[in-house]
Amino acid sequence: MIRSFYEFWIESGSGPLVNPVPLARNVRRRPHAHHNPLDPYGSEGRLRYNPKVPRRRPRQLPDERWNEPFAALRSNRDRAILALGISNAARASELLGVRGVDIDWGDQLVRVERKGSQAEQWLPSSPESFIWLRLCQSEGPPLDPQAPLWWTLRRRDHGEGLAYQPMNFEALSAVFRQVNALLGTNWSMHDLRHTAALRMARDKRLTLRDVQTILGHAHNRRHLPGRGRRAGHRPSPGVSGRPRGARKASCAPNRRRLGLRGERPGGPGQRAVAPATRP
Image 1 (cartoon, rainbow, N blue to C red):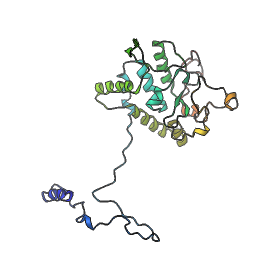
Image 2: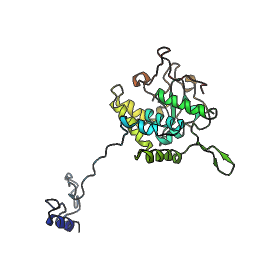
Image 3: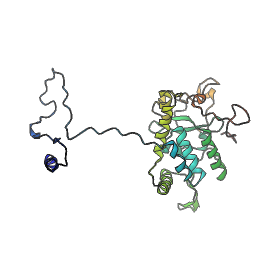
Image 4: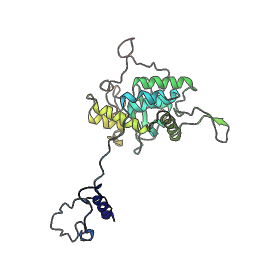
């Protein structure tokens, strides 16, 4: 039937020059039928009318169009989430699971729980993302170290009266639906992860190992400190068995090489965001 379809368009002059469907399919034997185990396997090839699906390039948000969806956001909470996602390439579920104790204001690190392995990892983030995060915290209630970091902007009734609820994936998807309806686009939170990964891959200061570590693809749970369930606080270097003065986590790349250590006119080495109360 498929061959007759191509024959019709070939006769009308609108189809391909050669019919890609074999003439007699019943003549074709099953690949490696009656194969002698002592003989090597030969290449059978692929059916001509069943071509290999080409590999698609990952979706990314161009740098010149980043300001459009960012300006279309309606709250500092949404701007903080997008700024963190574009700087540390964390997944949406990983960012939504961040609590107050997972924010290190001094070193500008965010602790996430990796999808799949459930391992904890500290990710460096840009100074701009912490500025938007500080603006988001200034508009809401005081930050509770054990409470979720992201909350809904509207109070909802769940049987116990009106109250704010922790932000979930459906609420984050609604944010992108509003932006896409306004701009006529189809961006998603996962596109930010692709964009951040491609930006890091183009950065000559980062090795492939650094990029894989930040993305969580080079994760080895046995070599990560604090790989169990989340504790209420970050263990000190003496408790975790690492010498004092060591790096925060073996999976955290060098921040100076990443170029994420912000400075302000007050002097070199100072953070762009002044820490309030360190968890």
